[in-house]
Image (cartoon, rainbow, N blue to C red):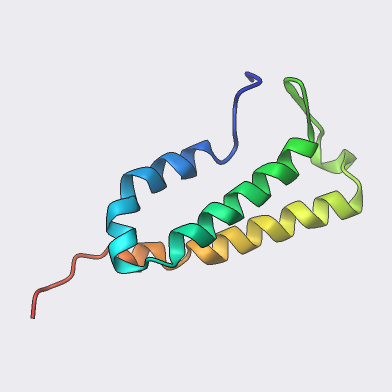
Length: 91
């Protein structure tokens, strides 16, 4: 695994592609999600040492709980995205 690998890179790339549509349909969503991703990435970076990751079972309970909480919060904030992407019929 390369040192520059970022767990949230795929999500960020997809949101970059979807940004124009999501900004039009839910302008408040992306700043929130961007902040969630940054928070999660910061927490994950604590578990990385060079090119190696600390195994989950070796993380202390507090770090693990923070990562789990940040992941859950990000997923909750991303949950409206599928509905926002549905094709809307003109009235």
